[in-house]
Image (cartoon, rainbow, N blue to C red; front, side):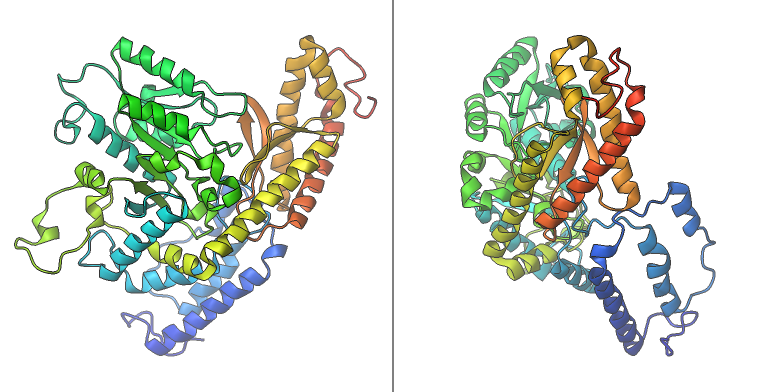
Amino acid sequence: MVSDASPSDDVELTPEAFRELGYRAIDDITAYYEQLDDLPVFPGKTPAEVERLFEEDVPEVGQDPDEILDEWTERVLPAATHNTSPRYFGFVMGSGTLFGVVADALAASVNMNTGAWKPAPSGTEVERRTIGWLAEMIGYDPDCGGLFTSGGSMANVTAILAGLRETAAYDTKVRGLQTDEREGRHTIYVADHEGHSSVYRAAELLGLGRDAVRLVPSHDDFTMDATALERLLDEDRARGDEPFCVVAQVGSINVGAIDPLEAIADVCEERDLWFHADGACGAVGAILPEKRAQYRGLERADSITLDPHKWLYVPYECGCVLVRDQELLGKAFGMDAAYLEGTLPTEYEGLDYYELGPQMSRGFRALKVWMSLKYFGVKGYRTLLRRNVACVEHLDDLVRDATDFEALHEPNLYIYSFRYAPEDLRRARDRDAAVADAVDDYLDVLNQRIADEIRERGDAFVMTTAIRDRTVLRLSICSHRTTRNDVDAVFETLSEIGDHEDRSRRDSLDVDDPDLTDPGSG
């Protein structure tokens, strides 16, 4: 017990009590990571069950520190989803470096507000230096501007707003979008299949509206068709719209596609458009020499989104935006406030990040990136990224070698989508157009059930997504702890669940073919 802490009377823990509590917390964290492989990845509890775990009145008096810490292991962890697990393949979530855990604790201890230089001199410089490192790593100008954000969505909002401010024919910062000088809608362009939902969020938050997002046709490999982009730009301009930004996917959310960056850069340069590269998922892959050719043209982007809490594995939350010309961020977000700046100049003036982004109050996100980069180094990160890529390539081999799975795209980076689709059903679908929709509808349900079952069991966290409007399995292998053995085990489980679900549900397939309603007969 922490005997010298008196929670009802003392304002703060004594140094001795804090040290004892801290040692215990570190022991709890260490024990958690030691048992990580054996924990169910998903708790398998309903929202109502989790809600009941935390039903209690607001504490009227302070509680014993040890008892409070007990609740971490007794209530919080049992209802947690462990995206730290090597078998967590949902969304696009990094696995959390241990140095990042330490860094977050250290950052919280000093509680610096990195919104401005005066309350965070060292925090500001760590962020500025780390931004330069990230840019240099991916082949961008290390003298660029940028800052850390909560995630890719806010990074995209920051970049797209900077693009709007720079390209609009009038001062949108002062006059907004409601002006007589506006002749048409400001429009944004993104690939029709793999464009990220955060682009719509940005359009909504900036007051442009979802209709401002124009979908550009894609090639069969899910990458943007630059010729179609030019055609769409011409059509929109002829209608009176004002195109201002093209968003290229740099490692797309479902298949890891990288749009033709060089071609898009040419289009944007010729037409004076803002070129934003959404590399939240995949820009980091540019550090791999064997992948670098795909990123040609990235250095020409006006802005880049890059999420360290994805493929650099740092703990949440940590997104990042890079902008080639930092002055344009200042133009978009600069503000005047005497209480922030002081009324008279002094020699103690530095970079104020509230002048470069939407937040005034900002946590010290940079520390965990800075420390993780110093620990792994670029070479270490290359090793970890290659391990993820190799796992995806191995998964693709398993899918293509299996009779009951269907490959949907070539593997690239660390995101891979595929489908459980028994061979007899695939043959019938491809042979007979009259049954194709019914078969695909059945496979939609089957794949959703497979993902639900493996997640509810706690064996792995797998989600579905839509590829060409069909439900498929999607694995984001974005953990530095995942090995080929994890992939093998999860694929075997997916196969077992798929076979069981197919056998138990096949009679619900609405086709007039007795062979197809009896799995195994084909």
